[in-house]
Image (tube, rainbow, N blue to C red; front, side, top):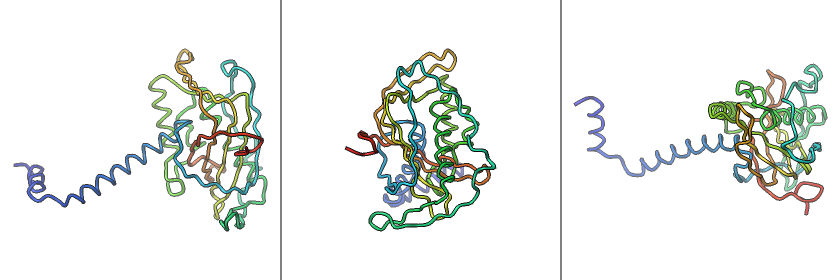
Length: 263
């Protein structure tokens, strides 16, 4: 009898309490489910509501993004490029002041408007690279996304790179078209150390997801998506001196009126 067979036999003769196996099974299931959910959230523009997601209602800054009109099949978006703000013009330090928000919940505020603009600019560049770029290079994922499980619970850059590599192996790529509508990007609630914040990207527009053949560029699949809001956890990378997406989630909801959630 081999050593391995002996171990198996011992376990058979002296079984553990059933609750031990239940606990082990639950732990494994949670680990596998958590990793799978993280990948699905980051890949799918409509992963479904995985809430609750809490974003401070006190807004720091907002920017409206003009959307094209007409048939998205006739629209082209250039690949994402360098940030508009020169690296030397980007602030390297800022102060966060904690103010009491609704129900006394502390909200992190930054007075330097350049920091807020930098967050929005870096978020939009990452969004364009992932959803509007033609054949994004998986090796560029770490420029726009960051692995910071301590803050976000997921390894965003690793997950995005893996997803894009899988799409390349299947010979497809996808683009998310927004047209005939409105879009509003808002920054809110910096962390006390100033190294993370939230971005809400409300997309009150026609949303169309298209999968393209990687060689012929022919449309292989077309899906009409509902309106909703992207919630991004932005984490500052001091080495690259830019904000990167540490977690990205889409919440499906009907958006009406001039502001998010207005009736």
